[in-house]
Length: 240
Ligand SMILES: NC(=O)c1ccc[n+]([C@@H]2O[C@H](COP(=O)([O-])OP(=O)(O)OC[C@H]3O[C@@H](n4cnc5c(N)ncnc54)[C@H](OP(=O)(O)O)[C@@H]3O)[C@@H](O)[C@H]2O)c1
Image 1: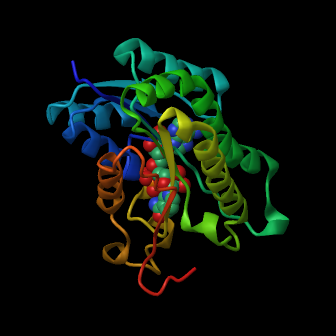
Image 2: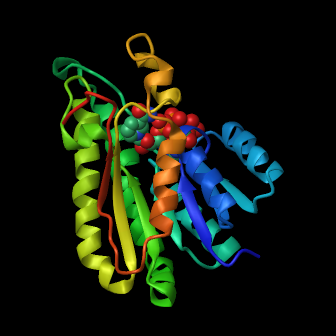
């Protein structure tokens, strides 16, 4: 049984999968969560084949009961939580006159509400890990568009800016308990989410999912009293 455990949402592809793989390499017991069960199971099978111990829990992060179920399944399997990765996210572009309420709600629910709810559901476990080693870590996936709002991606940008504000608040609220939070703010990363932009930005000129997972590996190694509240990943010339 691993002596540390991590829960990663949106772990079935892209950035979440890369972070989960890195955490497996680092010896963490893993709970992988994502929406579509078949895709999640395929990702889980690859990581099991690599020798990592894990639980795969499908769940829709727009559904409060699913968020609670994912947290409960993690607790049941591992009984502790050292690293929480709030990575599940969705971006739906629209010019302002074309904004559809249902899509606003979906982006708010997955990108922001689920993050808030998962903190609530796991705060006790995070605090217990913080009391043990003062290095419990929560990684919140924001975006460079959370630092500087983008046209057409306005709703997405607003949800990601809110994630930064939430992360700042959580550091003020939980650092004293040994729980550190970080907002990661990448530009275009080469994942299924950016397929729509490949015509304009070649895949090999995008940030790699492994660039993000290596940053998280670095965060695992920081000393207990070092808090890194935010990391921005830019592409060359992509100034804020
Ligand atoms: N790629 C970029 O350029 C970029 C840049 C900045 C920030 N980000 C952020 O990074 C995070 C990961 O994105 P990615 O690029 O790795 O995209 P991705 O490959 O499309 O992965 C998204 C993950 O989130 C899950 N997910 C989406 N909606 C969900 C829901 N309602 N309930 C549960 N899980 C859900 C997906 O599962 P299903 O496939 O089953 O839905 C998938 O596992 C997101 O928060 C995104 O906003 C991405």
